[in-house]
Length: 264
Image 1: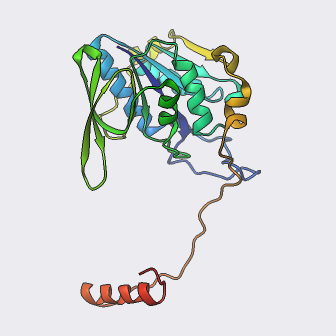
Image 2: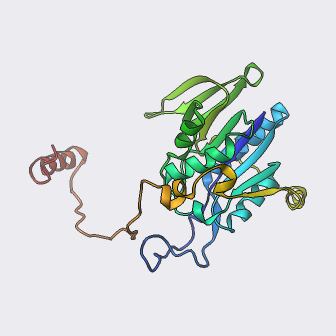
Image 3: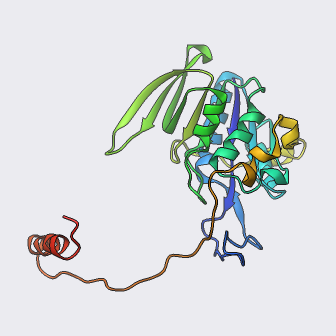
Protein backbone atom coordinates (compact mmCIF):
# COMPACT_ATOMS: atom_id res chain seq x y z
CA UNK A 1 0.00 0.00 0.00
CA UNK A 2 1.05 3.56 -0.66
CA UNK A 3 0.24 5.77 2.31
CA UNK A 4 0.41 9.56 2.67
CA UNK A 5 0.85 10.99 6.16
CA UNK A 6 0.11 14.66 6.87
CA UNK A 7 1.96 16.12 9.84
CA UNK A 8 2.20 19.54 11.43
CA UNK A 9 5.05 21.11 13.36
CA UNK A 10 3.71 22.85 16.48
CA UNK A 11 5.19 24.66 19.51
CA UNK A 12 6.40 22.36 22.26
CA UNK A 13 3.59 22.11 24.82
CA UNK A 14 6.15 22.53 27.62
CA UNK A 15 7.61 25.74 26.16
CA UNK A 16 7.03 29.11 27.79
CA UNK A 17 4.91 31.05 25.30
CA UNK A 18 4.91 34.77 24.63
CA UNK A 19 2.36 36.75 22.61
CA UNK A 20 3.91 38.39 19.54
CA UNK A 21 4.17 42.17 19.29
CA UNK A 22 1.24 42.39 16.85
CA UNK A 23 -0.85 40.22 19.23
CA UNK A 24 -2.05 38.05 16.35
CA UNK A 25 0.00 34.97 17.24
CA UNK A 26 2.75 33.79 19.56
CA UNK A 27 6.34 34.98 19.38
CA UNK A 28 8.23 32.17 17.62
CA UNK A 29 11.74 33.49 18.30
CA UNK A 30 13.79 30.89 20.25
CA UNK A 31 10.66 28.72 20.52
CA UNK A 32 11.10 24.94 20.33
CA UNK A 33 8.89 23.15 17.79
CA UNK A 34 7.92 19.46 17.70
CA UNK A 35 5.78 17.12 15.63
CA UNK A 36 2.11 17.41 16.62
CA UNK A 37 1.23 14.62 19.09
CA UNK A 38 -1.65 12.92 17.25
CA UNK A 39 0.36 13.17 14.00
CA UNK A 40 3.06 11.02 15.62
CA UNK A 41 0.46 8.32 16.22
CA UNK A 42 -0.78 8.71 12.64
CA UNK A 43 2.76 8.21 11.33
CA UNK A 44 3.28 5.13 13.50
CA UNK A 45 0.01 3.61 12.27
CA UNK A 46 1.01 4.25 8.67
CA UNK A 47 4.44 2.68 9.22
CA UNK A 48 2.87 -0.43 10.78
CA UNK A 49 0.40 -0.80 7.90
CA UNK A 50 3.22 -0.36 5.36
CA UNK A 51 5.31 -3.01 7.10
CA UNK A 52 2.45 -5.52 6.88
CA UNK A 53 1.61 -4.72 3.26
CA UNK A 54 5.10 -4.17 1.85
CA UNK A 55 4.05 -0.57 1.32
CA UNK A 56 5.51 2.92 1.21
CA UNK A 57 4.97 5.92 3.50
CA UNK A 58 5.30 9.48 2.17
CA UNK A 59 5.09 12.40 4.60
CA UNK A 60 3.59 15.80 3.74
CA UNK A 61 3.81 19.02 5.71
CA UNK A 62 3.23 22.73 5.19
CA UNK A 63 5.22 25.56 6.73
CA UNK A 64 8.50 27.50 6.83
CA UNK A 65 12.06 26.18 6.62
CA UNK A 66 12.00 24.84 10.19
CA UNK A 67 9.41 22.23 9.12
CA UNK A 68 12.20 20.31 7.36
CA UNK A 69 13.41 19.26 10.82
CA UNK A 70 10.05 17.59 11.53
CA UNK A 71 10.05 15.92 8.10
CA UNK A 72 13.60 14.66 8.64
CA UNK A 73 12.48 13.08 11.92
CA UNK A 74 9.68 11.26 10.10
CA UNK A 75 12.18 9.98 7.54
CA UNK A 76 14.40 8.73 10.37
CA UNK A 77 11.45 6.81 11.80
CA UNK A 78 10.88 4.96 8.52
CA UNK A 79 9.07 7.12 5.95
CA UNK A 80 10.60 6.72 2.49
CA UNK A 81 10.40 10.36 1.36
CA UNK A 82 8.77 13.69 2.19
CA UNK A 83 7.06 16.62 0.49
CA UNK A 84 7.39 20.12 1.93
CA UNK A 85 4.84 22.78 0.95
CA UNK A 86 7.28 25.54 1.76
CA UNK A 87 6.25 28.57 -0.29
CA UNK A 88 5.37 31.74 1.64
CA UNK A 89 1.98 31.73 -0.09
CA UNK A 90 0.97 28.70 2.03
CA UNK A 91 1.53 30.60 5.31
CA UNK A 92 -1.27 31.64 7.64
CA UNK A 93 -3.91 29.31 6.23
CA UNK A 94 -6.92 27.97 8.09
CA UNK A 95 -8.20 24.39 7.80
CA UNK A 96 -9.90 25.16 4.46
CA UNK A 97 -6.81 26.62 2.78
CA UNK A 98 -4.43 24.05 4.26
CA UNK A 99 -6.69 21.10 3.39
CA UNK A 100 -6.98 22.38 -0.19
CA UNK A 101 -3.19 22.64 -0.53
CA UNK A 102 -2.49 19.21 0.96
CA UNK A 103 -5.15 17.59 -1.25
CA UNK A 104 -3.56 19.09 -4.35
CA UNK A 105 -0.16 17.72 -3.30
CA UNK A 106 -1.57 14.25 -2.65
CA UNK A 107 -4.25 13.73 -5.31
CA UNK A 108 -2.07 12.54 -8.20
CA UNK A 109 0.30 10.44 -6.11
CA UNK A 110 -1.53 7.12 -6.47
CA UNK A 111 -2.12 6.78 -2.72
CA UNK A 112 -4.34 4.08 -1.20
CA UNK A 113 -4.66 5.78 2.16
CA UNK A 114 -4.11 9.17 3.80
CA UNK A 115 -3.65 9.38 7.57
CA UNK A 116 -3.53 12.52 9.68
CA UNK A 117 -3.75 13.36 13.36
CA UNK A 118 -7.19 14.11 14.78
CA UNK A 119 -6.32 17.76 15.46
CA UNK A 120 -3.36 20.06 16.01
CA UNK A 121 -2.09 20.99 19.46
CA UNK A 122 -1.81 24.69 18.65
CA UNK A 123 -5.03 25.89 16.94
CA UNK A 124 -7.06 22.67 17.29
CA UNK A 125 -9.37 23.11 14.28
CA UNK A 126 -9.81 19.32 13.96
CA UNK A 127 -11.04 19.92 10.41
CA UNK A 128 -8.06 19.79 8.04
CA UNK A 129 -8.36 16.04 7.40
CA UNK A 130 -12.07 16.37 6.63
CA UNK A 131 -11.43 19.23 4.18
CA UNK A 132 -8.68 17.19 2.55
CA UNK A 133 -11.02 14.21 2.15
CA UNK A 134 -13.66 16.46 0.62
CA UNK A 135 -11.29 17.72 -2.05
CA UNK A 136 -10.13 14.18 -2.81
CA UNK A 137 -13.76 12.96 -2.77
CA UNK A 138 -12.73 10.08 -0.52
CA UNK A 139 -14.54 8.66 2.51
CA UNK A 140 -13.01 9.59 5.86
CA UNK A 141 -13.29 8.79 9.57
CA UNK A 142 -12.34 11.07 12.47
CA UNK A 143 -11.07 10.05 15.95
CA UNK A 144 -9.82 6.67 14.75
CA UNK A 145 -8.79 4.26 17.53
CA UNK A 146 -8.24 1.10 15.47
CA UNK A 147 -7.43 0.16 11.87
CA UNK A 148 -7.54 -3.23 10.14
CA UNK A 149 -6.79 -3.45 6.42
CA UNK A 150 -9.05 -6.01 4.73
CA UNK A 151 -9.60 -7.62 1.33
CA UNK A 152 -5.97 -7.34 0.38
CA UNK A 153 -6.00 -3.57 0.71
CA UNK A 154 -9.37 -2.89 -0.89
CA UNK A 155 -11.11 -1.88 2.35
CA UNK A 156 -10.50 -1.05 5.99
CA UNK A 157 -12.28 -1.86 9.24
CA UNK A 158 -12.02 1.23 11.42
CA UNK A 159 -12.90 1.72 15.09
CA UNK A 160 -13.95 5.26 15.92
CA UNK A 161 -14.04 6.79 19.40
CA UNK A 162 -17.38 8.26 20.44
CA UNK A 163 -18.84 9.78 23.62
CA UNK A 164 -19.54 8.02 26.93
CA UNK A 165 -16.92 5.32 26.35
CA UNK A 166 -18.67 4.02 23.23
CA UNK A 167 -16.95 3.02 19.97
CA UNK A 168 -18.28 2.84 16.44
CA UNK A 169 -17.01 0.24 13.95
CA UNK A 170 -17.01 1.28 10.28
CA UNK A 171 -16.01 -0.54 7.09
CA UNK A 172 -15.07 1.66 4.16
CA UNK A 173 -13.59 1.20 0.73
CA UNK A 174 -10.13 2.50 0.00
CA UNK A 175 -8.75 4.98 -0.85
CA UNK A 176 -9.81 6.89 2.25
CA UNK A 177 -8.66 9.45 4.80
CA UNK A 178 -8.27 8.42 8.45
CA UNK A 179 -7.81 10.98 11.23
CA UNK A 180 -5.96 9.25 14.07
CA UNK A 181 -6.60 9.85 17.76
CA UNK A 182 -3.61 10.05 20.12
CA UNK A 183 -3.15 6.80 22.03
CA UNK A 184 -3.91 4.42 19.17
CA UNK A 185 -0.44 2.86 19.30
CA UNK A 186 3.03 3.39 20.73
CA UNK A 187 5.16 5.61 18.47
CA UNK A 188 8.66 4.29 17.88
CA UNK A 189 11.97 6.03 18.45
CA UNK A 190 14.39 6.75 15.66
CA UNK A 191 17.41 4.43 15.57
CA UNK A 192 20.92 5.65 14.79
CA UNK A 193 20.70 3.77 11.50
CA UNK A 194 17.40 5.48 10.70
CA UNK A 195 18.83 8.91 11.48
CA UNK A 196 21.79 8.30 9.18
CA UNK A 197 19.55 6.98 6.38
CA UNK A 198 17.24 9.99 6.70
CA UNK A 199 20.05 12.28 5.56
CA UNK A 200 19.97 10.60 2.15
CA UNK A 201 16.19 10.53 1.72
CA UNK A 202 14.40 13.02 -0.50
CA UNK A 203 12.49 16.05 0.77
CA UNK A 204 10.78 17.59 -2.26
CA UNK A 205 9.85 21.28 -2.04
CA UNK A 206 6.71 22.44 -3.86
CA UNK A 207 5.03 25.79 -4.51
CA UNK A 208 1.39 26.53 -5.42
CA UNK A 209 2.29 26.63 -9.13
CA UNK A 210 3.70 23.09 -8.88
CA UNK A 211 0.29 21.94 -7.63
CA UNK A 212 -1.76 23.86 -10.18
CA UNK A 213 -3.05 26.22 -7.50
CA UNK A 214 -3.41 29.98 -7.62
CA UNK A 215 -1.78 31.63 -4.57
CA UNK A 216 -5.11 33.34 -3.85
CA UNK A 217 -6.72 30.05 -2.75
CA UNK A 218 -4.08 28.94 -0.24
CA UNK A 219 -2.56 30.38 2.91
CA UNK A 220 -4.00 33.52 4.47
CA UNK A 221 -5.41 34.66 1.11
CA UNK A 222 -7.51 31.51 0.75
CA UNK A 223 -8.74 31.35 4.35
CA UNK A 224 -12.23 31.90 5.70
CA UNK A 225 -11.00 32.35 9.29
CA UNK A 226 -8.95 35.37 10.37
CA UNK A 227 -7.19 35.59 13.72
CA UNK A 228 -7.68 39.09 15.09
CA UNK A 229 -5.76 38.68 18.34
CA UNK A 230 -4.54 36.13 20.86
CA UNK A 231 -4.10 36.53 24.61
CA UNK A 232 -3.49 34.49 27.70
CA UNK A 233 -6.60 33.71 29.79
CA UNK A 234 -7.19 36.28 32.50
CA UNK A 235 -7.10 34.96 36.03
CA UNK A 236 -10.09 35.82 38.17
CA UNK A 237 -11.16 35.33 41.75
CA UNK A 238 -14.53 34.83 43.35
CA UNK A 239 -14.38 31.09 44.04
CA UNK A 240 -16.51 30.02 46.98
CA UNK A 241 -16.34 26.74 48.88
CA UNK A 242 -19.74 25.33 49.89
CA UNK A 243 -19.61 23.74 53.33
CA UNK A 244 -21.46 20.62 54.43
CA UNK A 245 -21.84 17.02 53.30
CA UNK A 246 -22.45 16.08 49.65
CA UNK A 247 -26.26 16.24 49.86
CA UNK A 248 -26.26 19.62 51.63
CA UNK A 249 -23.65 21.12 49.27
CA UNK A 250 -25.54 19.84 46.21
CA UNK A 251 -28.77 21.41 47.45
CA UNK A 252 -27.10 24.78 48.03
CA UNK A 253 -25.42 24.65 44.60
CA UNK A 254 -28.69 23.86 42.79
CA UNK A 255 -30.43 26.70 44.61
CA UNK A 256 -27.65 29.15 43.65
CA UNK A 257 -27.77 28.02 40.02
CA UNK A 258 -31.53 28.48 39.96
CA UNK A 259 -31.85 31.83 41.74
CA UNK A 260 -28.52 33.61 41.24
CA UNK A 261 -27.04 32.28 38.01
CA UNK A 262 -30.52 31.60 36.53
CA UNK A 263 -29.25 28.68 34.45
CA UNK A 264 -31.75 26.11 35.75
